[in-house]
Structure formats: C-alpha cells, structure tokens
Length: 117
Image (cartoon, rainbow, N blue to C red; front, top):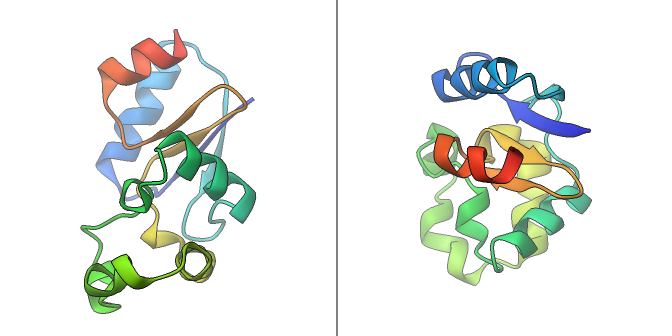
C-alpha cells in the first residue's frame, strides 16, 4: 500500500491527500513530524533521486535554517542527515510518498498522475 507522510497544517499535503482521494487511490497517511520515515525508506528515496540528498529535505523549513544544514550539507555524511531527520521529521520534504513501486517527494500533480495512474 502507498504510504504518505504529511503535516496536517501543510496546504501542499492537504492538496495531495485531496488528489489521492479524488482518484480513489488507497493510502496510509502518517504524521511526518511524529513519525518520520525510517532510515530504510530514506535510503530507498535517496536512491530514487540519484543520491541527491537535497531532494529529501524541506529546505524552506525554519528547522532546516536554524540548524544551518544548508551550509553543512555538502560535508555531512548521509547517515548524519538521516539521524537529524529521525530526530526532527519536519526536515523531510513533504509529502513523502513511498511504496515498492513509487518514491516521490513534494506534490506535482502531473508527476503523480504519471506515477500513480
């Protein structure tokens, strides 16, 4: 089943859930702040994005800025980035959508259409 990690106050996440509902696509919704994706899923997503760790991060979040990740990211081991994500799910780009066949971050209706239908 499709898993989607969202934040209830995020309008993009709400739009993504509405889109899934309108297409009658079954999913399991998880609160990203309380339940960040496990390292196994982060690794799969990283591989799907050709190792580009920035594609997994919510670079517009206050937490990202406060932690100064932008300035340190190029020198940070991936394991350290995953560790930060495990401590703070708000660092993950959302929505974070994963299944055995699908690995997407963010909500782009055209991409979702292509991947999910």
